[in-house]
Length: 260
Figure 1 (tube, rainbow, N blue to C red):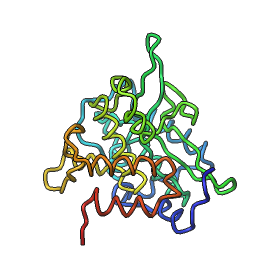
Figure 2 (tube, rainbow, N blue to C red):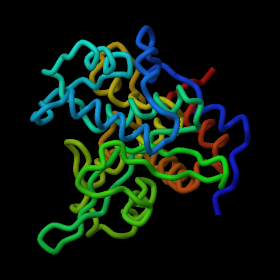
Figure 3 (cartoon, one colour):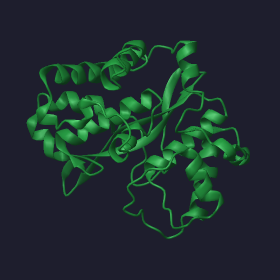
């Protein structure tokens, strides 16, 4: 059973951060209603008018919230938003409403030609104050409706890979596959839990930012300590609320490598 978040932890997920700060575009949020389901419908309406008959380009960079809103308001139709960007924008809208919300990067189980596969998926988790629990919101509602029944956490898949090698070739995330896909999704999910939603994008595309060793290394070249660290994180990330402080400590010291 999910334990209730402490007030201090819930507050972490109410505030804008580096990637979700709308900056001078904060008034964009005024058009959204208060009910979460209505917010999603309004966002989909806006995006349907913005992205007309277009497929996502092979665009490397990922936009933060202020850049996304700028593109929408200035009708930069050459920009087709990625699912990750749409989820990030929805996250910012909820934060503007002071609703505890976080971005998650996990996997959807689907079938193709009679085989099970797992595809990486970005979605929002919104904290329900009345039942003191999180529930899932798929901002795009494409392909497969996102429910807890078909979501497999990156942490769960990482732990499964430790014992089931045949599972390896059934997992896809962005340009990665197998173990590497799971490691990268696990780090993205960790960044989401720690409110650094696009940090791995910065690791990939920005040359002037420090990149942690555990990210740089191929999954087969990790040290015993690094493998153990990811294993411990995966166990705790099954229930991130119950281990929030410990996850944050490991994240700061071993992932971000802030030793001071």
